[in-house]
Image 1: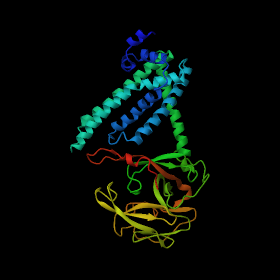
Image 2: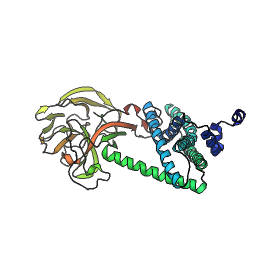
Image 3: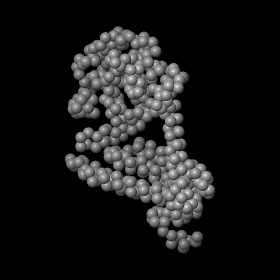
Image 4: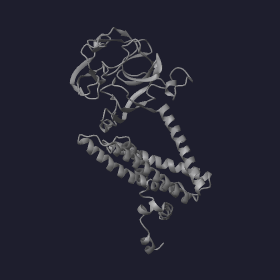
Length: 412
């Protein structure tokens, strides 16, 4: 193609909408390399961010931590998609290389990028309406979701036409390749997720106020499965394939742990370990004592928000900083002066078990109750490590609100 013919060609950014097959052939003929990773990661990222906007989480949706996570996920997804498509294409007689398929995936996402721009504009309008003191109209959110769906469908159609051109497929082989690729990607993703979930990290979310202020309702966090070794509770659905703990290591005092209780081992709980085997634990006038010695406690500024103690979310709550004998320091809340759980008997922690409390002392079901009890070592699932997403749940007319400042916080 000479220079005059090149000049006569429309920009691929415009022709990709009407002639995706011709456009991808022209792009591949120019052997593009630079920009494919950026385009693909931004395109795949746009799908993730658009979904956040579609769920009504527009506040801080473009916080740098969320953007970085989406970009990294986009690059990884780009390579996985190209690998799977190459494998599926070879089965059906395809000819495209992995590099060409990465380009197809990247350019196939361009409608999603435009969809994200439109979605952002609609989200800004909704945000301005909310700040004006009036809830955004329902039709605006419906339009936002319709926009995301429409451009998503456009991405799928454009991608399919590009894939057909580079692989030399007709309609049925293209459809088969797309369906087979989706199924294999799903299977691969599930295999990786199950492996990571079983051996390394498992995501959890905070359902209650029991661990305020350390963990708020709507915090999503990772739990390390390797910290204390593995039991059958480490495996999805907790099948009783073996008993005991493999590669076991006991938790330290102050660790925030996820576990099951013997009376109901179908539910995951999260609390803080304060008592080790052989300890004598008691709460006296709201103060935690370990082996007859009161834990150091210092007053802090009142905690406000998140409804830690009931309906009135704006009510201030007394906050303390506790420091355990091993130096672990954390914050606790005191909703009620001399509350129901502020004076207990002395608990002697049995061998092989642990005593756990919630940081929101007056709003936590924990080892102080006979129906809950101490935690057997084999019932530990893992140690809570890091918050990876935090979204304040919707309340009344107020929509869900992202809390990006909590993303990346280590759980102490």
